[in-house]
Length: 450
Image 1 (cartoon, one colour):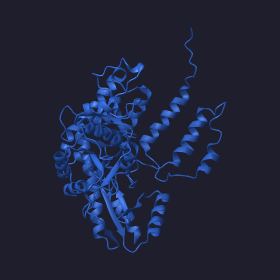
Image 2 (image 1 turned 45 degrees about the vertical axis):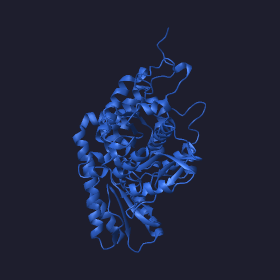
Image 3 (image 1 turned 90 degrees about the horizontal axis):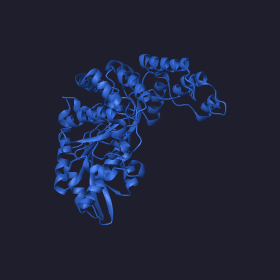
Image 4 (image 1 turned 30 degrees about the vertical axis):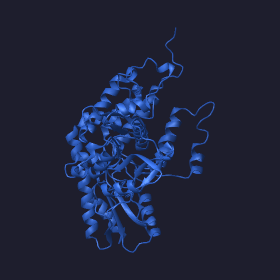
C-alpha cells in the first residue's frame, strides 16, 4: 500500500495559482486587454501540449502573460459594451471553492447540499417574479441553453393538450428577441411568427393578437417576450402579452437574461408587471446579478412540465430517485457543476438589500449618462432607456468614424463602447451593470467626441 498519488501535489505551484487568483480578484482586470491574432498567440503558446509537458510554472506564466491579456476585460467598470459582467469579490472567490469541491450537481443523490443551496437562490428569483412557492428550475450555462430548454417544454405541453401543427410548429417573437430564439427554432425544427414592434421598439399584446390571427400554415405553441432586450434594453408589454397567451392557451416564456435583474429595483419594477403570469423565464446572474461566468437561472411556474421532457433514463441512472430535485430533469443537461453556488454565496455574504442598492446604482448611473447626452450639443439621444442600456449618436459622424473612435479608446483602455445598429443606423450603445461605473467618468470620455 502507498499513499503516493499518480499526479503529484505540487504545493508551491498550487500556492502560485491561488496567489495569482487572489491578485486578480483584488486588483481587478486590465482594461487594455483584448483579442490578438491567432498566429501571434500560436507563436507564444506553441508546444504547450506535448509528451513531456512544459511544467506548471511555465504553464502558469503563459496563462498570466499571454492567455489572459488576450481576452476582453468583461468585469471592468468602464466596459460598457455588449452586456458586461460585474461579479462580486465574494462570488469570484467562492467560484474557486466550488471548483475545488468537485461537486457533481446533476442529481440530488450526488449533490444534495449544493442543489439545495442553489434552489434557495432560485426560490429568491421566483419570488421576485411573483411565481408561486411551487415554482422551480435549475441553473444552466447561459440564456441560449435556458431558452431552448424552456421552449422544448412548451412544445411538449402543447402536444399533451392535443395541439397538432397544421404543417409546422412555430414560436411567436419579435425581431428584437435575442438571437438564441432563432437558434432554438432551428434546433426544434420550427418556424418563427415575426411580430412587429411599436414605434418604441416594444412587443405589444395587440400586435401579438394580430400576428396570430394572420399566421398561416403554422401552429404557435409558445410566445417569447423579452424583459430587457439585449440591444436596446426594452421591456416588452408583458401583461398584455400574457392576456393573449391565456386566451389562446399559449406558453409565455420571458427572456430576461440581461434585464430581469431589474426586478430588484423599485424604480423600474412596474415595467415587469405581468411577469408573474409567465410559464417560464430566464435571467443570467453573470450579467446584472454580480456572479461569475457561466450562470443562467431557468425557472418554471410548474416544474413538472419540464420533467416530462428533460428527465434522462438509462441503466446506470435507474437508481436515481425521481421524487428528489434532480437539476438534470429541468433542462438539456446531465453533467453539471454547481454553477449557482457563487450567486448563493454572494447573496448570503452581502444580503439581498445590498443587491437592490447595486442594481439601483446601475440604473442611476445610466440615467445620469442619459441626461449628460441629452444636454450635450454634439450628441443626440436615440431612445429613452427603459433600464440601463443607452443608445445615442454623435451628430455628423459616419459609421467608420464611430468604429475608429471606439477602437482608439478600447486600445487605450479608457472605455469600451462599441457601435450597434438601430433601425438600420449605426449608433453608439452603452450598457451599465457595474455599480462602480461613475457617470462623470463616462461623460468625460464622451466629451472627446467633440
